[in-house]
Image (spheres, rainbow, N blue to C red):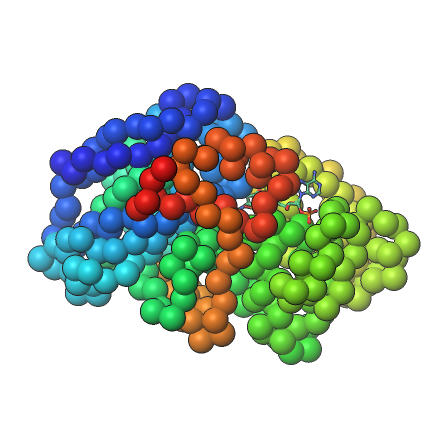
Length: 347
Ligand code: NAP
Ligand code: ZN
Ligand code: ZN
């Protein structure tokens, strides 16, 4: 077994504290990564707090992982020792179902194995990236373009792919008018990608103070979502809305902003179910859909896209003794726009 030094919540809602544990001995197709940076996603907070379902504790969160390969198994082809490597939200899937074969491992028909708060194929708990190393099958390891700042690349592994994938799936491009709802970790990546794809981008926010940042990050317009008049001006005009909000909010007001046959895509995952009125949907044959992260192939494509367009996350680098402070600030909507843990240089 490989010794790991990490940070875990021992039980639901508890503080994140140092935690020593073991990873599996690397298999022939595994790589071992010395983790340098790991992003803090709002999903980490949801899961530590058991917002969605009873979690597996102790829980080592973290699924925005970048570092350097320290070991490659005898069957590994994609990596060699010393390479940069990344891991996102998944570490395995069945790999044989039609969905996996289509490169959509996040929707595996048998069950995706998430990077933490899950059981691996042997029934052992998976532990995430708030730790000094990770063992992963090379099929779930990603390569990182050399021109990108490494710390600011970490959030691409979840916030990046989660916004890139639906923008691709719903074919956002030069002639699209797209709305990004919520300016946090996911939202700011949504702005950057939608802008890079050439769309006309409108940010919907509850935070007036984020306006200048939104314009800098790629928004063409900013609308306060609690200003009914400002919302009305955009009625029935959007090709797609990407909703990244982490808490309960009004979906009906957003749906009314969509054109005929257009879609409100939920990527934010509030703990409580939303109330949806049939009327804004049936009046213009609109849809509400959801989207989960992205497959491995598309995550690699997204990283290449970021390399080409020089896109990374706007981050606040935190020491590992600041995790609990970061959680508090994330919950208070006080982050610009992603916390990243400096794992390799601890406090
Ligand atoms: P985040 O950085 O905390 O951003 C969430 C944003 O939502 C905030 O910046 C805020 O934007 C807005 N917001 C927060 N509370 C609100 C409220 N009560 N009413 C309206 N707006 C509110 O979180 P994140 O890391 O981007 O994650 C966002 C959500 O996506 C989380 O629920 C997370 O679990 C989920 N997620 C889903 C996937 C997936 O695969 N689908 C992947 C990763 C994360 P404004 O200040 O601009 O209003
Ligand atoms: Zn995430
Ligand atoms: Zn599968």
